[in-house]
Amino acid sequence: MEAELLEDWVGETNCFPVEDAVPEGWERVSLLAVQGPDEYRAWVGRLEPAAWGAAGGGGRRGLGAAVGDLVPPDLWTALHAETGTLQRQGWSLPPGSCWVDYARPADAFRVTYRGHSYRLLDATHPTVARFALAGTVLPRLTEAVALGERMRQAVMAHARGVEGGAEALTLFSGRTPDGKPLDDDHAHAFFLPADDDGDGRIDHLTIYVPAGLPPVAQAVLGRLRKLWGAGGHDIFVVLVGMGQPEDYGGFNVAGGQTPQMAASRVWVSRTPYLLTRHPKTHRDGRRKVGPDGLQLDGPEAQLRAELARRGFPAPVLVATVRGAVLGGKEVRWLAFRRERLQGGGRLASPVGYGFRVEFPKPVRGPIALGYGCHFGLGQFVAEPG
Image 1 (cartoon, one colour):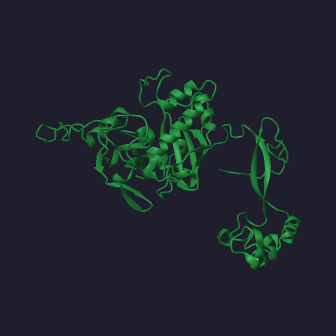
Image 2 (cartoon, rainbow, N blue to C red):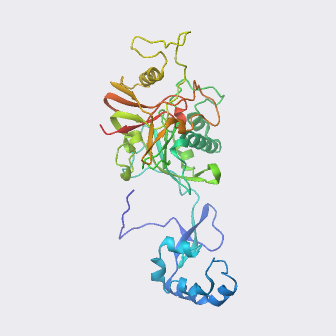
Image 3 (cartoon, helix red, strand yellow):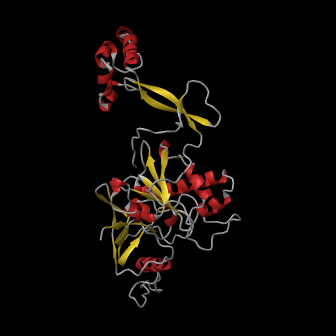
């Protein structure tokens, strides 16, 4: 994201402070602001340390008669106080701050397309919508499939409330209005959680729709603000932008890129790959082996067959990996949630597998395969190489 200060800007602001009712077509939002020096001095003057002490803290734990020592003497000192210090002292609001109500247009977060951070819409609809996540507690990547399902539910709920949303609903659900699966079962939306900073928690989510996102679908995604979270922790989502995988793929994570959509020869499992068919065996338990030496419908055979169906070149090397490295530690596939909470899908076995795949030439992601691939399972991320 880039910002620039303009000296001769001409225009009208799209927000303003309010004290009373908000005009029609606008919405109220409260922002934490800084008091003026005079306001701060008046606030300090209104504090009564003796009264606080007599009340046993008066609402701020443990202050007592020492409240005068805890109040910053001037606004400059208040603004330089460290957050940890204020928390230990029991402040519920930083000294020198106040809440100010502003009015902003009710459609302030309507999606628009400007600048060069992602491809402008022309005859080709964007296929990628990229969201950043924020919350008190972000979910672990091991819960990717649960978050993918919640994102899908939220998007579909918004689609039902938009005029002409049936088209968007089909793309997000993978089903026609009469409930039948689409002929191309992978042209609809993939909901792909990502841990781009490698700390083990989901910080972004990509919605990838190979068939493209028409304007009504873009409008639906622009409405999304929050997901209900497990354990009472809601997750706030911010639409970073829309475009094509090449607009976001890369290895400069600090610059907003993601290896989820990079181009590389080497791809490694990030979430477990689950089989959709049972590996073939003889009646005596021996594996049935094909001409390539692989077990028929075994894990590697299914992986290679699915890559071919998706149009990827045949890998030159496929090696198994035991788990994903999250937060500097190897996490085995057994630790991941490996089944959807709702809905169906063909799941042959809850056993998870992982692979390191090398292609003869660079390919671009996202790559998600196997059971639950539309909800975050079976994801691969690129490695430089």
